[in-house]
Length: 163
Length: 417
Image (cartoon, rainbow over all chains, first blue to last red; front, side):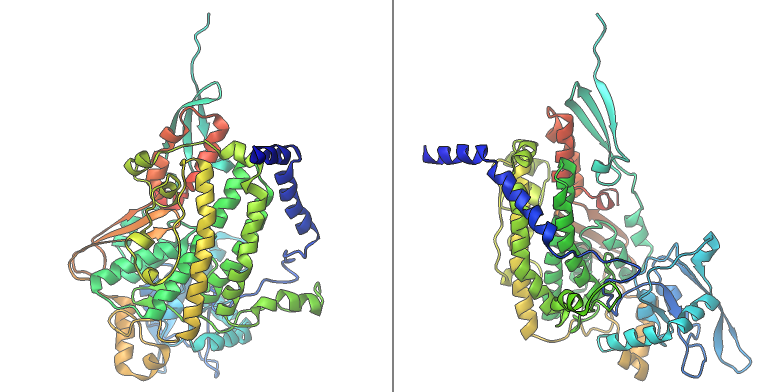
């Protein structure tokens, strides 16, 4: 009987609706968690797997030795490599293409690379203007690596102890 | 008099309440459902066939993309199948990390479900609150694996990398004062475990918010109570698992009934429903989030005091660490062998199932002794749930179909595979 009265009282005073509205009212004055994207960014982990880059040794020589492990391990077959012997007897790639439309950003290429040449960077806000732009050529990959050398070196060093 | 015919309505595949690409053909008598006929296959990517053509490790990434709101749980079932075949020992720490992330995934999944279910039924604000908490958990995903969704973090024999002892922080910008920045970075000062620990402390108050918003709300109750009732017996016959089965009052949970990993060492309860309607399933899932929070807390405590390896030392299956690989010839050979050929499983078959947020997610794997599976069958929990759509929605109104889709927690990545 008493329970019933309480229920009727609650029903008539719209208590549960007011309780719900109090939640939204509190959130109205709470600090916002929205981040204004281009000006500020959410924290990005050093392990982040964004766009790829090819790295160089400190003397400017490219690291990639065309062992094709990344090509073999890529689950989406996004990597195409052609290689050639250079005049100095070292083997280097003549073609290193990553098709970004195929790539699933699993990070296996970075994991497989024995010389830390191919890496995935923290960069995720990239765009291209034509379909051809989706294929990252060797030149483009090295360019990304050169442009972001500092960032790549820092993040890879930070994470190296876990690998 | 003109002949009165049933009205046939195409619901989806582009309907926002169809949770992706569900196409329902509804036969209506006025606004009452006479027949609901789900058409599937619009998201079919041939995952099972695709896996047959790849060495075992390369398919881990495809597991994430099955049920794309509970990524790591899918991976867990897959790597467990391989470990069972190989009789591979997994380090204790890796098991705890996996369980912790399974439960984080469960919360992620249930928050996604809660937000979209609310949105379908008409409760708009819950979506934003659920996504606020999801953001923090997705940051945990990113911190360990480097990816916010498709983690590819579990490996046969353990997990790829140990938990980081630093969380990334918000950087300075023109828009924030230093004081604001400090406040935003407050829970990011310590390690990932501190961050998760912090989350487990604040999460109950967030659940209370959802509770306040929905549980007793009369509109919410009008839309959910006594909709889509499935009796316990019928639920078993239909092959329900997970919250759909427990909502009907059957206390069946693989974490308790067939404990895998370290679930037998952890303390948690299994919530069950009474009537088996949408409202009960809502309550069950809400309680599951609280229990997951409890499990995460226990895992965090264990992981803090027990450092150790997170990957099996069996070099035939797990890659050597980078330092060894660069200095030691044998490790380099293992590295090359593993990343080109992979490893072979003994001939035979195996079934491994886990308690996925949606139900029993199973991988049935047949090996002919090669480095690729001969056949993989994925048991998706959503499939039998969706198959019961006709039975659950018959006799209800058109708007209740949306509630029923919501309560089934359908994700098409796993149903269409």
